[in-house]
Amino acid sequence: MKVLKNYMYNMSYQILLLIVPLVTMPYISRVLGPKGLGTYAYTNSVVSYFLLLGSLGITLYGSRQIAYVQDNREKRSKLFFEITILKLLTTLFSGILLASYLFMCSEFRVLLIAQSLTLFANVFDVSWYFMGVEDFKKNVIRNVIVKLASLILIFSFVRTNRDLLLYIIIIGGSTLIGNIVLIPFLINQVEFFNIKNLNVIQHLKPAILLFLPQVATQIYLVVNKTMLGQMDSVSAVGFFSSSDTLVRLALTIVSSLSAVLMPRIANLIAEGKTKRVEYYMNQSFEFINVLALPLMMGLAAISSTFVPLFLGAKFSVVALLVIMESPVILIISWSIAITNQYLIPSRMNREYIISTVLGALSNVSLNVILISNFGVYGAIIATFVSELIVMVYLVYSIRKYLNVTAMLFSNFYKYAVGSFIMFGVTRTLSHILPATIVSVILEIFVGIATYFITLFLLKADILQNWRNFFHE
Image (cartoon, rainbow, N blue to C red):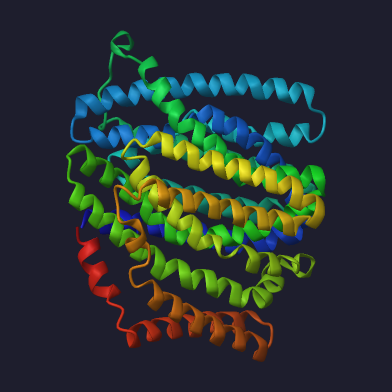
């Protein structure tokens, strides 16, 4: 039942993450326009490099280490303070570097200073601790309150394209406050230690080993926006960012289970229960397939109608970008599952580093070639190819430990057939019905019904499998 409870908490937050942008994106895209939205995405991508350095892989490293000793209060308390002090030092170092960069940089300086609020907020982030002890409730409640508050503030105060600075402050400020309000919940969770009894430096090397692949991951997550801003225009960044946001919103629905299972599998690995690890991995991949395939096909099916209605006529080019990028929903979901649920808990740092470096190098190389020739379309192609390269390597890297190919393609054809039939029905409706919000909602519901009816006819036994899995 703990898996179900944590999944429901995490899933409820992921749904909120889905709803909030669905509410704010149409408004923000119209208020800020392609240039304003692109400027936000560009400045955010610059500061994100410093935020990554300040975090030093501690979210993953910290939650994993806490998971190993989650049942020992003394050990987890000592770990918490050691890792927290390390994070404070790395954030301070990153802040000094950011200040130096801002001193030399004249373009967008004020906006970059406002974006740096997120780096300051990083000092107070203790969400990794609660992930490690499999307590997702506190994180979710905190995040829900913060998201709703930021939503109210955005609609209340961001009115014109001159309010971009205020928009950035609201986003960064809400993150800061959200991190601070979680700290009091630690009082009954940890014991205070004399700083002389702490060994902070021991965590530096293993944290760096997880930090390096996150650097590479961050490069191919945000380098598209940075390179588009430099090689094309901030409007192109706005188009790419809008497509990428829509695709990754769908991705969060699928990937939410990985965050729940990572500490569970880490604990099982520490106890040597390999059969249980295989069971969780197998069920996780089936869960991914049954959701990722229809989300991928469904988003592509409704994009031509949905995007102009959702983002406005100025963003009509995004419809094709969404269709081109939608396959990464499945590809990235597989990669996240392998990385977060197996490589990191198993301390397979070498394989983790190689996969992310491959992704970063291929993404940057392809961007240089494709953006200069095809602009924003080239950035989408580079994203797809680099994510595919990462996924193929990850599957190859764990082939000796798990029969991952069999896991990935268990009942795959049933979900693929259902998704293709759903795509055909939904796409046909989008051509027949008028381009209205009501039509889009109808297309979504008809598509969902078509998909699950097809699975029922194909006798896909997903319901029984999930019932057993989530009651663990």
